Length: 166
Image (cartoon, rainbow, N blue to C red; front, side, top):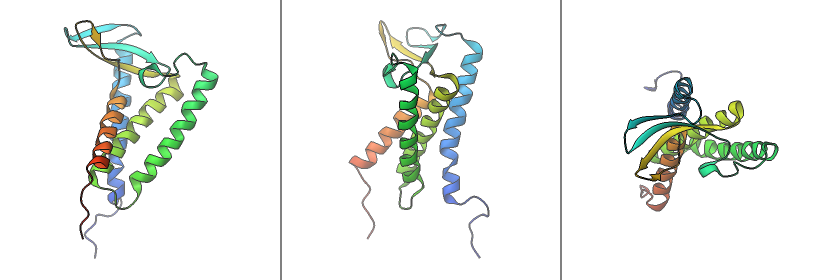
């Protein structure tokens, strides 16, 4: 008799990571959209952190934001589907380390969150605004944070792979 619980297997439990990342991202965006209008600024930590609602029709750092939507939207859709298929395959295959699975789960959850925005709103909701003096980092959201943290973890596993057991 197997000690494994019935229902959700190991891979199924891992699916909770991208799902939780997606849900937290969507909830945070719904919360900010209910409180701020585009361009509104709410100071949280003066001199360091604001909530600033921005709608980004492009990708990272506004890439392709000025491109007509009839080209931009299909481009993001095609690239998104290809990326999600690849990362999803890597996420579910055997032999993936825990660190790699966490990294891939974060990237998938973040990509789904921003993809949802692009499909439903036509642009991504950004609202986390960190700054110091006159320097401002680009506004971002939780999905962006998941993607960046996942990419860093994935890079870490590529640069410093765990030795295989004999």
